[in-house]
Image (tube, rainbow, N blue to C red):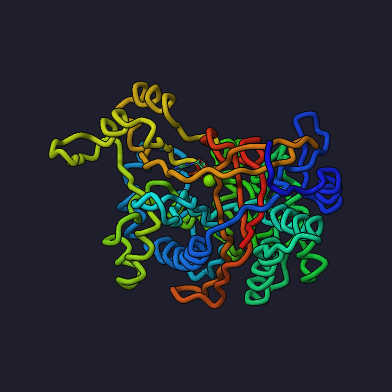
Amino acid sequence: MSNIYYHDPRQAKEFLLAHGAIRYDKDGLISHLSCSLTPWQADAAFIEESMETTSLWTKVYHAVASDDEFLYRELAQARAADPFIENLFLALGAEAAGKPALYLNRNDCMPALGEDGQAIWPKQVEMNLMASALGEASSVVWRMHRFVGQEQDWRLLDNRAGENLAAAIAYAYQKLAVDGIVLMLVPIGEVSVFDQRITETRLVEEHGLSTRRTSLEELGRRGELRGGDLYFDGVRVAIAYFRSGYAPFHYTNAYAWEARRLIEASSAISVPSARTQLANTKLVQQVLSTEEALREYVGPAEAKRLAKTCVRFSKLDDVIVTAEGSQVTGAELARANYSDWVLKPHREGGGNNFFGEQMLKRLDELEDKDKAAYILMEKIRQQPFESVRLIDGELKFCRCVTELGFFSTAYFEPGTLEPDLLRTEGYLLRTKDEGVDEGLVLGGFSFLDTVLL
Ligand code: ADP
Ligand code: MG
């Protein structure tokens, strides 16, 4: 079908298995993660702008997360409509004073077609400030392309995402200078353990730290505060690293929320803190999508640059004046142009959004009291390209679109808005069939890919 070059699938598969780009399947067996067999030819301006704005966004989100007045004001309605958000506010209320902030972020962008239909520019899908996953697996896929494509004269964009995520945790640990462990909080029944296992191994082997894994519920049961410090099974926790806790179902019972409160109330660094998680809601993303709002947090040139990476947003009952001069609500506009909008609840973790006809159906079902728990986002359009992927050991050709998320790590001393550490390096590139809306790799929608410069 295609004349593009692609790697020998067997070699690729063995590389993925050998280096841990793997997952549990539904029967508890191990399979490789889906990935491309040929890298994605990227646009240089898109890559550069994505990378640089990612660092800027990290600083903006830290400033927003530090701004109590903003959080309480902007999320007042969502809080009333959504118990999950309310619970995060309760955890925030318990926060100990004077804690440093550590970020392991990922800023997902699509190479959108510009208004002239030609130039390509990053448009932000979302910034992830919590449990940004697949850094290690992405690094393995980059190494696979490099290794298996040895004979190709390819200039691949280096992807040391995994290394950098672990290095940021180690940096914060050194700064804290306490004797404690890194506690990784994971959901019960996690399928993507291998990505996390590599991170843990790095922390122990490369950085000399001690780690433990547990669920929120277990921390709630077995954790305690001693003199303001967090202890789990009698061991002091220096850093609580959330790879769980972004979805309501992770809070299996009141103990899980107790764990959240304990972490906030303690001296342990929480990655992320409840305030950061609140700043990461889709509603805040909407508020930050205009130059005017961004100017509260960055200079005018930076605000303009960031706003250019944002698409249009609307609340369901915002009143919008159309090009023809009539007044409609956001929901009416989305209804009339349903393939141009995405309906999003304030949820993370994938699989929560409504596209196309499903969006219409959902809009019909929504009661007034629930509307504040959703936003509308303009759908990002891009130029499809050809790729070939390896899925369950099989080759599959496809016309695809893609989504690039640069990882960005940062550390801020208490009360400061200028980072001691800010590093944007390494990425998750997720490619998928052009007709597919959702983007989850683990949900089988998309596959891991590498940037060719
Ligand atoms: P989640 O927090 O669940 O990860 P996202 O906002 O990242 O939610 O959306 C999930 C996926 O849906 C994205 O990875 C992307 O593939 C697709 N998506 C989301 N918003 C848009 C959009 N505005 N245009 C096109 N695709 C989108
Ligand atoms: Mg996402």
